[in-house]
Image 1: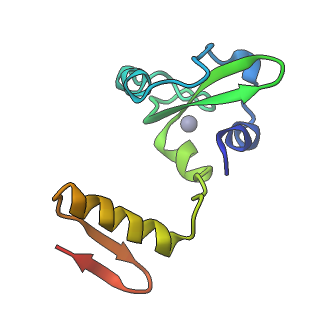
Image 2 (image 1 turned 135 degrees about the vertical axis):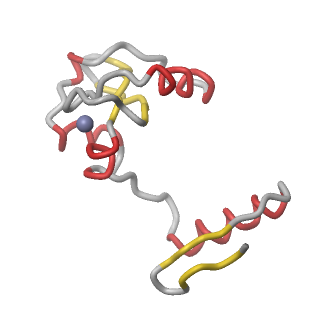
Length: 110
Ligand SMILES: [Zn+2]
């Protein structure tokens, strides 16, 4: 589910959200997350922030607490197997140890 869908599912009105940059740099999103603004849906401290694009209200921050995030998980742009394959390649290129768990293969890596 994309962020706009998450906002709809959580009953968040875009007009109630803070204006955001249309395409925030990671540092901008990270800075917002460090502030732990209240969850846009329930008011608990948020754990993740992102931007939604509303036709009437423009770009707005959508901040979600753990529970609201888990209720509206993002969808991957690629199949999970391919995502893990690419993640392993990136980790290997960066010489980072990576350990993953899937229902099919269990724990893999160190
Ligand atoms: Zn919440």
